[in-house]
Amino acid sequence: MTATDASTPTTPLAINADPVIKRRIGAVAARVALLAPVVAIYLIFFVWPVVSVLLRSLSPEGKFDAAAPVLDFTNYQQLFVDDFLLRIEWRTVLLAINSTLLTVLLGFPTAYFISRLSKRTAGLLLLLILVPFWVSIVVRLFAVTSILSPNGIVNQLSLALGLGETSLLYTQAGTLVGTVMYLLPYMILVLYAGMTSVDDNLVLAARTLGASSVRTFFTVYLPMVRGSIVSGALLVFILGLSFFLVPAILGGPQEQTISVYIQQQIDVYQWGIASAMGILLLVATIICYVGVVKVAGSFQPGGIGSSQAKGVSTSLPFRWSPWMAVSAVVTFITVMFLVIPVLFVFPLAVGETGTVVFPPRGFTLRWFAEVFTSQTWLGPIMQSIIVAVGTAVLSVGMALILARVTSRMTSTTGKALIGGLAFAPIVTPAILLAIGMFDVQLKLGLTGSVIGLILAHTIIAAPLSYALIVAAMSAADRGIESAAWTLGASRTRAFWTIVVRGIMPSVIGAFAIAFVTSWDEVVLALFIQTGPTKTLPVTIYKYLESGIVPTVPAVASLLVLVVVVIVVVRSVTSRTTNRRGPAEPSAR
Image (tube, rainbow, N blue to C red; front, side, top):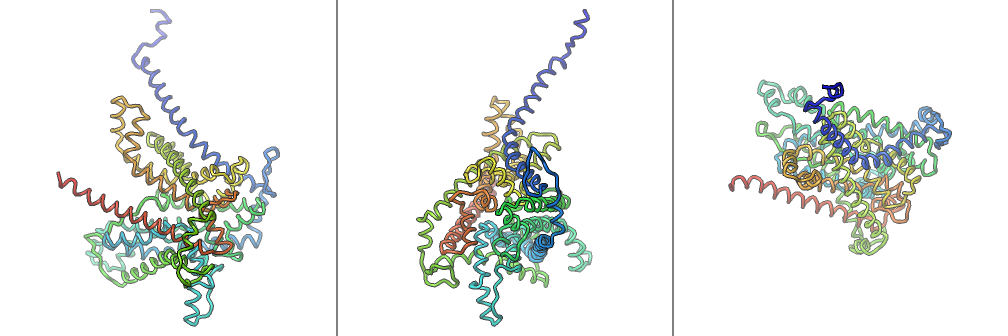
């Protein structure tokens, strides 16, 4: 044997090493190729906008020059020394705190009462809470504006009772009412999920051992749901801290919050202070988000999926008590508080007068006819449909790619990085993302275009689609896909025909949630839509700012009816599926 021969290993390991390495390199390359377009979209339309706002905040004039970068913290100093800015910041924090406290006070008894009811009754009450939750926020804001206005039912009732004139519109109280109305369903859903996971046997054991109902509640039950309370409170506080629409519509010029002030400053091209405020809001949001993760162990975006009505435990049956009676009263108030504004739009849509008044005068359906014949409304409706469909398609595509990559990954760090990137837009304040997106799309020449709006909406819709699809794909049986490979199917064909088809209900749900997210989005569209044709929510928002015309309640009524029809169809379909499920085994 020569020296050359001795230096050349001929073991099976050496022979097979090359193909194994090539296979691994090929797998990594395939993942990189899949992720590349998704990462590019996130970098351009999420990371770049946030970085752009950060760089602008470090310049006193709010301008960033790459040739001569400036590092100046004057804008941030003003946030903590300027009395006017401090009042705005304190007003924002106070609104978030008060909203959180009220949602806990209303949400806890409501969630507790529903969790103790039978499955059918609990499902009905949850439906009454979720229908207003799914109705467009601008529709609910229009209803609240009409109720709280000087001509609204609150003022009329106050005058009838001899309490004098009461107008809550453009007041701190009105802003608080609108904010609580929007945030309350989030709190109820979080608390309900926690309460239905409580082991009732522990409560029953405490009572059996002689503990009173009050002691059992405070020493056994409350500690088991404490995590849900803190998690829900932090989530609501995050949303309330960065909320824009409610303060902008119900607050008025004297009740500015950080988000409203940022929008006003950008309108006059004062980017410096506005950008610094946006970054301050982002930092506060991240701190609260870390708190949610610490308490709950993970972050689940609110409103995803359906809350199942599990009903009362057979070991701990429903019993009336003073606390249960109070909970029932609070539940009734909560449901009415959420449902009445949604129902209020219908009578306003059939009045004969050219202005919106309550009670309506006369009866007519011509405002509904005008919605379907006037370009004032047909244009925005078509614009919203096109943007929503484009957003849903792109969001589902990105979600499938992200879910596919993460489901095949073994690295926990890699999964965490992808998950963090996917969900980052959700925890970013909408107003910060809006001004950053406007800045970037202005540079790219995309402002006012349908493509620009689709890409912007995809950034906030794709994470929700990903949450649904990754959960379904992780639970799917991988053995079926492996069997398809063994039988000669290509990886692409096996993925589409086996994996995607197997999780099709989740894919359809991901499409629907992305569509609804885009359809209802206002803040991004308000900044980016510079053309004459706006999306439907922005059009309604503009009327809320300038003055209500009778076609606005007509449009609002149609949007509510669409949600009701979808909910009814979904409920009937679910019941039919549940009835067929148990029947099939017995037939065999």
